[in-house]
Figure 1 (cartoon, rainbow, N blue to C red):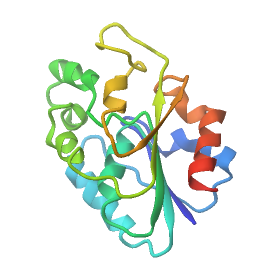
Figure 2: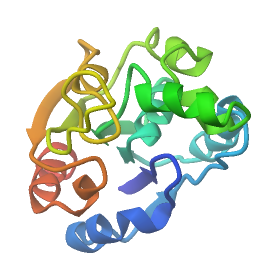
Figure 3: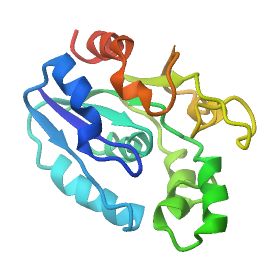
Length: 190
């Protein structure tokens, strides 16, 4: 079975190094995207790759990668399950703040709670087994409510069609957690 990994905003496929080694993943497809491109253009490129996969696969997605996975899971019957890590299903308040200082940065536009990319993703029904891992450490005071330093807990838990598990890591530590390895193994590779 293939594994698709989709990294978070401003990251790369290197952010999955610990998970790939710990899970002993061999047949991995990394869906990288360009943070300067429109989310819809990135999604189109990802769909071209995913639609050519003929065998079964699973998705592991971090942060914004999980929003992309929401769109991708709707298009292929070979998908067996998804584990998302700290995905801001309701967008990132930090992106709203960031766009004040850099209004032309496309990534901030795409991940803000008011963006069409985020709003439309919430209209998509999850149609496969999906576990969202919620990060619970890293509160910063300029984000209202409990947060992992980047994303609010409310944004990570706003869907009612996924299963939730909490892990005491911050937004970036989550991809280097042995507990996450255990959850992914149980949910995707049982």
